[in-house]
Length: 76
Image (cartoon, rainbow, N blue to C red; front, side, top):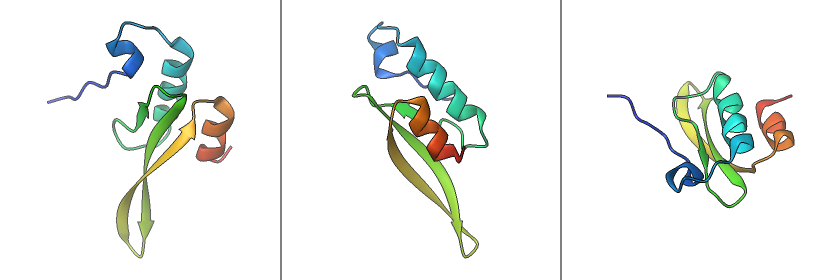
């Protein structure tokens, strides 16, 4: 079964193409599936996997829905 992710704006029929493109760009990187969610308050919640002592941990971060914040998160 494949999960479908809809942003708050998509659920309410409001197009936010810049945010949708930003989410897709973040998800193009080596990320877990369904990793970026629009919180509809100008921020995104991004899930990452971090490894400590050989154990994988899921980490969620909330960032502003901006290219600058996404670049910082992704290490650019």
